[in-house]
Amino acid sequence: MSNTWKIYILAVVSFLVGTSEFIIAGILDKVADDLGISLAAAGQLITVFSLAYAFGTPFLLAAAAKVQSKKLLLYALAVFVLSHIATLVLPGFAFLIGFRIIMALASGVFVVTALTVAAKLAPPEKQGSAIATLVMGFSTALIVGVPLGRLAASIYDWKLVFGALGILGILAIVLVAFTIPNTESEQPVPLREQVSLLRNPKIAVALLITFFWIGGYSITYTYISPFLLTITGMSEQAVSIALFAFGVASLIGSKLGGFSTDRWGFSPTLVGGMLVHTVVLVLISLAAHSTALMFPLLMLWSFSAWSSGPTQQYHLLTLAPGASSIMLSLNSSVLQLAMAAGAGMGGVIVEHSSLSVTSWIGAAGVFAAVLIAASLLGYFRAGAAARAKRENATIQKARV
Picture 1 (cartoon, rainbow, N blue to C red):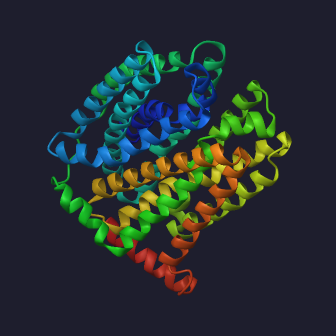
Picture 2: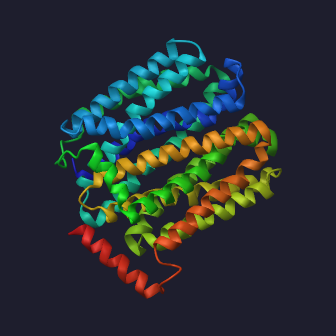
């Protein structure tokens, strides 16, 4: 089996992990109604997941630094399966919170390890596309997993979604066990040295891009189902279709983001994608009551938002080419911290203002990321030729 197919297999398993993470946003109102809690309280299931992911993943990866990559993938999937089955069986909000934390830790270890393995399986000139392929797995979760989860929760019980993910996780263990090889691992790096990378101003500022970009996205996406139901006035069926359209666009966006990164570089892809992201969130606010306009806007939002994923990750790899797993781990932690901050801020907005305000605040967050990226990449102080020369030199250095 070629390495390309192995990367696609990791993307298939990433679909399950992505569905587990994203599904709460798709069934938020169902969980709130069933457990007798507010939308804002249910939204904090995303906050605790993201916080556990952000702070727990680096410690677990540091502790497991000497474990072979394949074993680490299998261990993470085993915990993934057990936590999902437990969610199906054990009742109550407290148990749900606890198992969401466990799911987050398992997901974090799997995602960072899978991204590292995929990057090592691909040739240097195709690393951007390899990362994009794994991101495609998460995008597929938005296309298939979240809409189907929404449909199943509407017809049956939202807990059955987690039971199904647990069963599919068993199949994923078998798939990884028989197809994914052990790749050459990087030397174990103490957690103190991992954190010390943040002392590099370029890395710290680059991670701020992730924080504001994902934070702005999360403020809106966390409450997208109740937004479409109550503000736009969509039916249950229309919301499922809208989530499917959102997912299709995320798949296209992540794949083209990787292609554009390899073809034209990360600077125009990153800044351009996030600028479109900002504008679309503003348009969603202005067209909130129009179902006809909302469908294409949701797709354009998803396309632009997900195009930045592989681009930003590749950008970070060029800043520390000798420590790819550390950079991917730090970026994943910041990403999840941003998800937690966005979900938390969205909860405050929903409690004290209105669902319609979430996309305005989200647009402000993404625009902050645009300004930071433009400043870091020299748009405010250098011409296009100088910027392209600097970027090409960085890419060539990373590929050596």
